Length: 382
Image (cartoon, rainbow, N blue to C red; front, side, top):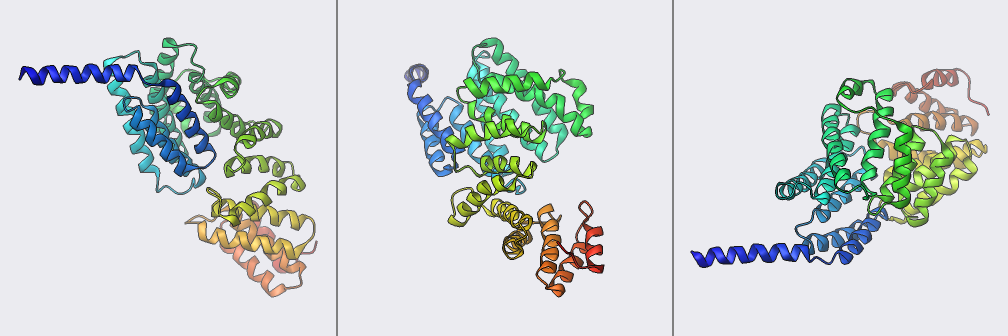
């Protein structure tokens, strides 16, 4: 019995010493390589890299956390597909449990606080996307508390400011955009979007593991909420310089020109996306091809090239019919209307009428029904 106890003590001491003597230079190198593979949409390679991390650094949460980030990016590329949600939640739960075990032994372990806060933050992000506001708010509250603790323990950790930046920005902006969130905000500190943007920019410039994610936030927040296309493009270009084959980065960059009705520039990006979809590059799925075909069709329509425009709109229409489940997308509604208008231009009135009638069967978007009724009475003319 004494031998067993002595062996157990020896094993625990050895395990602790081995954890303390990890090769952290190799760890950082592996993590950074794996993170780059995730953002480069090299998911299979990233899985292999983080398999090594979880094996060689078994008592550290980074491997499990970044394996969950691979799933997160798979979700981001097909955001309306919820099949991977449960896997993502399960992976994050593993990270949280592992961090809790570490914190039970050492409540000041900064890495455990950081990765647990990150896991709660990403779970909250997906819950918010799925409009599960209460659960998202609770995760946000718990995650924020951990970010504060981690910062107190190590104020020099730049990555921690990602959590501050996200919180300060969203706590100010989201309640204004989504009134359903307002009742929950009484339990949280006040937000400050300008402070949040400064914190995110700091991490985007000087972060260790969170630098790329902060750049992604700077791009998307400037596009979605600030409507600042110059800033969106600036961060989009920085991201694309490092990750030219990330369709999400490309999409946002191209959309800045669409917002400015500069289709001459927009189609440079969307043609590249379309061609990459045709070639089957990882991540360039039907959703990106549908969107790229739509904007190529718009460009040719504005140039009064009805044949070329209808070719791409028909591609977008077909993909929309495959992808839309339950509620018709704006892509489908607009495409059906535009095809009616284009076939009027081409002198194919029967086909135009078919499309106008279908517009009336789809949900109304803008004044789509009024336009369809107008063109049923009088053929569309450029």
